[in-house]
Image (tube, rainbow, N blue to C red; front, side, top):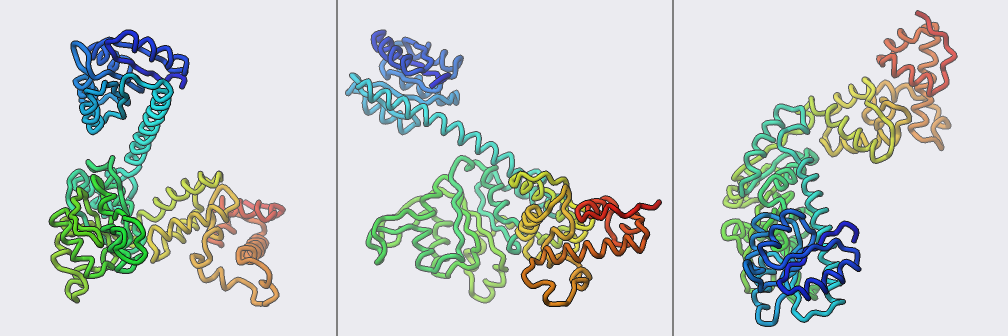
Length: 463
């Protein structure tokens, strides 16, 4: 309770004195005001965490003061005190954002509990706001998370479309980062404080998908033991992301079209219409125009979804992003694993840039995470990468005698083969490390790491 500020606003001195004494004993920092005008002045000056305020007061009543607190965007949690005759006003204030109300004469223990809950609510709200700011700072629209000119154009469109309420369709191969764009749009929109609900349309069969989206009433089908709210209701005042929209059955597409047009629907097993205020973002790795031509996707729904279309190019067409994103992932996974890793070796970067990346950014992330775990030095070398990224000559250099690899890991086999190759090339070059590095097409620094790792430092270096 240390440093938690509570402001008591009431024209009755006895009430202020009693509450002040109780709350000071609880460890709170307490201030008082005898009318709404003074209370508002103190609230602006001291920024209390909780305000306990009577509804009926001279000069400025509690309701007027509460509205002023909301208008000035003060972060205090407000609890109203009221007599039986003004309970309706307190209820209206709660609808407008007051935390709770207490009725005079009140029970002291109940007040203590309510204050503790209000303080906790204030703390959780502050943490949530901080988290939202951190998330918003991460999901930026200025293109700082890409080196690709094509992706910068995508982010320029995102910056324009995010503040609007427009429905957005995101297309691109699997693993290209469609969900990152969804997060970026949501957290840079007017709905950033609302929920972001995500549904994968390919993960559920038609019957379950309909229930998942629209909810169901108790008894709507055999396993419907209780009423369940669907994602459209849960996403109210926020954003609903429909991933793999191309996998949505035609029957469900009809219902989705109505939600887009009318912003209303019925739960499964109900005749009651439910209104919803949501923004829809859809994504697919399929060609919806081709599906429309084949009758697999409704044309009218496609045009409703594709008000703004964002096409994410595959990673193989964003060559300048491979090393850039690889280093971002390296920093992330090294930090999580508490590893002191500086960068990729030049040869490792070359291998990353030569790869076709059929799994796109998701594959790159997995490759770098594995490399961080498998690596042993300050640099990520070629052998720290998955074997399928290594050049064919590395595999050809492995011994063919079956007992050689039985009971041994692929990493150990490759390391021993590499050690033997480096030792032989060093010997051929009479210990000249610069020439050895050139012959092996690696940097001299990488060779030095390898010599130290494999205890080959006995070779004399020649100029």
